[in-house]
Image (cartoon, rainbow, N blue to C red; front, side, top):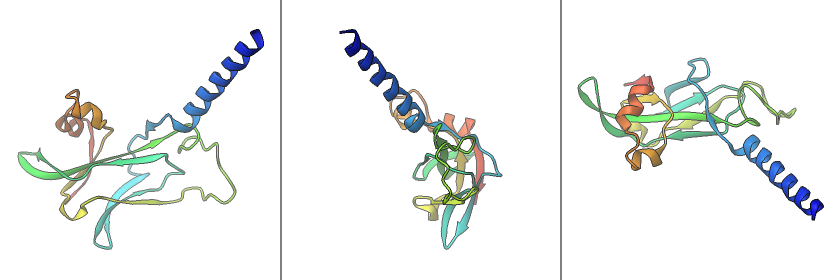
Length: 145
């Protein structure tokens, strides 16, 4: 019985460690050295030039009040995991380039008038725990038309 309990606890601990290293995402703080937003081939794109990232989160443009005017605003942020991050690259292989550039096109980029870098959780916004206006206030304006 003790060996079954020990094996079960070992599986739980190893599963939790695996989940943390490969799936627990945290936001990458904004840095103009790592990220830029610019027009390329008639579309708005975000360029990320860090070593790696886990995912990118972006919104479709939405109408929000910016400096007293209604503008179409998009939000974006990049995430990392312990295994796949700019600060720690546990999965570095010889065929991965250090400082590789990743390009991400914005949805409906033709109507975007401003882009803010800010972490957001759409579930919190839908549940009324957060608002897009609050996200914009804590975010950083990284591009405007």
